[in-house]
Length: 110
Length: 119
Image (tube, rainbow over all chains, first blue to last red; front, side, top):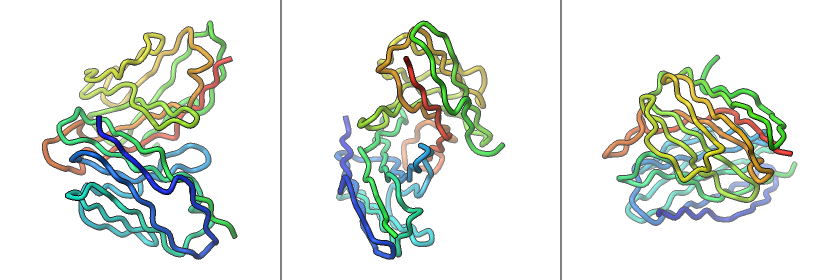
C-alpha cells in the first residue's frame, strides 16, 4: 500500500518562529489533506491540497504531486499552534479511505 | 449542531459490556467513515459507508459492528472488547467516497472523537 512519511517527528519552537513540515508519499494521490489535532483529539482541517499552493492566514501549504511531497508552512508561530499535524492521502484508484502519516508533534514555547 | 458530532465523548466499559458509539453529520454528505487512533500508531480506517452501503471493512474484528441506518448517522456497536481496544475512535464524512480525478468532494471532515477505555 501507499506509504506516508512525515518529518520531523517532533519540533520545538519559540513563539514567533517559522517552521516547515514535510510529507512524502509513495504513490499518485487523488486527495491530500493536512490536519491539526488539538490536545482533546479533534482533527481540524487545515488544507485540502492534492496539488498546488494554498494559504490561510499564517499557514500555507504546497503539494508537488509529480515529486510526491507536500509542505506545510507555519509562520509567526503561536502557543495555540501546538499539537500534532497530520498529513493524509487518498491513493488514486483506491476506495476512498485516507492513509495517515505518523504526524509531527509541534510544541511552541512562550 | 454543525459539522460532525460524536457521542459519547468519553466511555469506560468492561470487557463483558455492550455499548454503542454514535456519529451524526450535518453536512449533507454521502460517505461516512470510522477510524481508530491507538497510542503511538497512525490513524487507521475501520469501516467505510457510501450511501448507507458498507464498501470497505479493513479486517476489523467482529467485536466491532458498524451500522449506517441513513446517510446522516453512523453507529459502532461494541461487545466483548479487549483492553487493547482502548483508543480514540473518530468518525468522518465526505461528500463522495471516491473520484477518478482529484475533487474537493473527497475532502473528509472529522468529529471530535470518542475516547474509549476498556477495563
